Image (tube, rainbow, N blue to C red; front, top):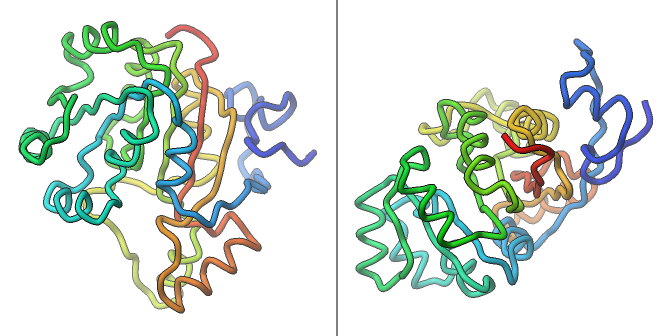
Length: 248
């Protein structure tokens, strides 16, 4: 098969056909040549939404860590607020929303995206970007979730990040007979499967980047980063920007 471009989802041909379910291959060998960004996931995500009106879904991250991350300047939502023209955060964790509000963070909403109030919020805010960072692996039905996003904000660019099941860190752990996992996660994603789930929801990738969660700070992390710079499919995290191909 011909080698796809960086997003591996825009090109016409067999891979686009496979992603759209127009064809099938039980043993496809999907080549991954996505660029690697050594600055870390947050920097990549901030670049993807810079200057936009950003609707940040699942902004809270892990609630007990918000205060520390905010103080250290590494909380993603705070970083997004600094680069966006406007930013609204939505999360279903009421305690986390209350805590972040107490810490002085503005424009936060405790909402389920399937509530009618979410549609009213989107209509009022008119986002240019919907940010969904490391959320899809927590969802019981990610396609229904993405279709709801598509229905409420059809003109917005969707920016998602997911943990990479093919990461070198996972291979290292598997070699030692263990799986290192956030126990709230329901699945791992790969370059092909994240594009496939987006396609099932009506989206097509327009840009894709591999990244570590953060710049390496240990010897082991620096070794991993050097390896990932050589073979990006080993990165910890996958970041994809996507546009809706049709109204859902």
